[in-house]
Length: 193
DNA sequence: GGTAGGATGGGCT
DNA sequence: GCCCATCCTACCC
Picture 1 (cartoon, helix red, strand yellow):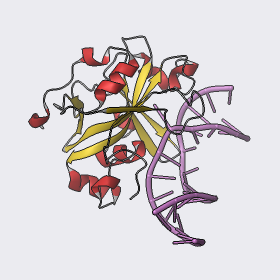
Picture 2 (tube, chains in turn yellow, blue, purple):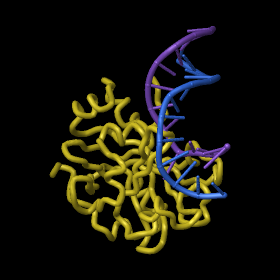
Picture 3 (spheres, rainbow, N blue to C red):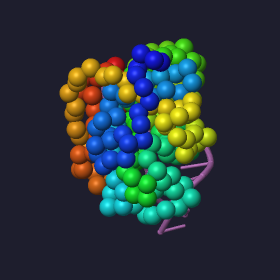
Picture 4 (cartoon, rainbow, N blue to C red):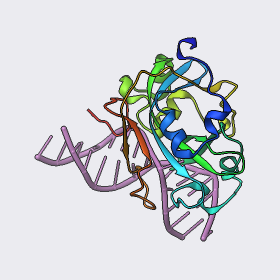
């Protein structure tokens, strides 16, 4: 994992959510022996963004989004899947970045077993898929991403173009340009072929 | 190649 | 009670 650089410091996350979402592209998520490079993110903004879980204020579930940056917010959706988010903004201000897709880099055999899928393109190409492949569950909700088995590394990304689009699968604020994609990546969500 | 619809359970109104 | 920041299978070109 050393090839992917050092752990991102808390100051990285203590910025505007859109900046963090854009800057997380190319970084490397590590959990145990598995690692993947982030190729797709979405920003969910504090209180005015009605698509964000934080829009209706602090509840037992959304508490983490209002806490210190650089922690994981993992929630359960559609009765079957978990989604991994990264808490942004300074402590006390809500903001989250949904990790939507990874390019698998390490632990690929483990990912195949967890996913029961062979093709590398089918392992982490969606928010529910990547948590399953990486072994991330609600047990990691609130985990500190600057230490511990679940962490995010600098990733030393080569230069790349960023594509910005509206977010996927929401109805409120559906036209806000808050989805960030590594242009041309084969590993983004929604690919079939 | 393509898409329609079912599975499934926690959180909030 | 109803809504979800989804994924997979079956089935149809």
